[in-house]
Length: 181
Image (cartoon, rainbow, N blue to C red):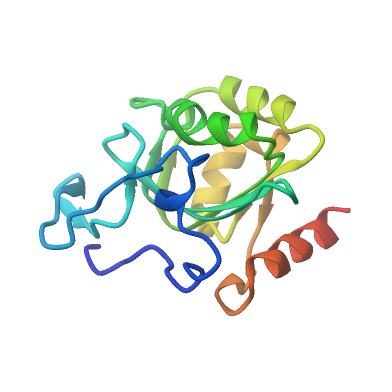
């Protein structure tokens, strides 16, 4: 897992630690030591800690004018024990929503498993972004099935097989909007 870096090819467009409106503004990273881990597996030091022991994120892109963000996730999404959605919502999504973000795209190719623990925070997030959407993109099939068993699909949209790495952020947004509307 330590070899899985957050996607870096959009850094010409956006860098979260340089955005004064980002929850990760002025964050510094240790490029020489692995200080984050999911269980006993170290992960790349560029991932951002949200207070969870098992889920990390990276804000890849934000456009305040077009009101959307794209966030990559890695690890285990555990709402049962560590309430990861609460942490993600409070630490990352709410500060962005407060700045006008209404379209949230979460990339989940590196999310290994989901443990449900209720849908309250998903319902709140859906209300707070009702003029936009929350899209879970490219999560593994077994993880999507686990989210659906927890009834999370009532609040978010699931998309798979979006080749987002070969596109610019606005193209990813447009593809999701075309599928949604």
